[in-house]
Length: 290
Image (tube, rainbow, N blue to C red; front, side, top):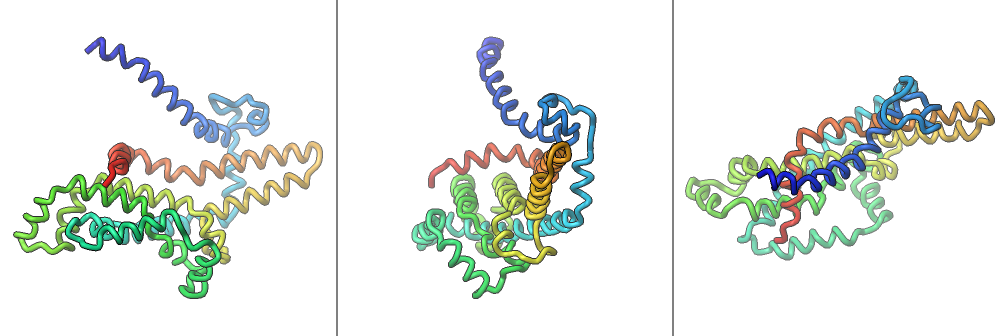
């Protein structure tokens, strides 16, 4: 046992090194967002924050649109994730059934959408002129609710982890497919459900391009668009300044930039540790071919 532990020391060291390489940039952004901006620009902040300065957060939260963006993003994330799961779970279950005769053609149809799309202009015309969803809450929730990759992960889990005998036993008890899915499959699939929920939630939280293309009403914009506008305004103001005033404006802009990154990522960082234990299993599920 001792020899095995000693032989694993290089692996532990490599793991720690990889962790530091991945975690340090995020840690630096956090400490830079609360440090003196001059010391950050001079490279004096690298391990601990120096001369605590919260002016970046103060300036950021003075923008009223920040709270509107937060509210909208929370709504889009919750509603979008719920709709995506409602669509993904039945699709994955149906495609996992070996007695579904159209399974292979349907799977091919879904997979084609992973490699080919109609393009931005046709998609825009469909959403705006046929579905009339542009500049509305629904454009952030409905049109792009199914991710085929996530569905394949879930379908593979249903195929590889749920024995066929469960369905046979459920049939003897008079279970329909809907009853079997709700009462048997979903309770036994918490691991993959947690992974897919987090995948969808992170994607919805970071959704940027859809809002940029389809939303014009400021009361509907998500947080990412609000932060983008704040950063653009600060960069423009900094570029208009000269000399010492320009230097101070640059310091302030950098502080706001770091604060914006923390504000945008903190909710997902808080949620992630609670679902982290499911990720290894989720990744392994996705690696299985079926």
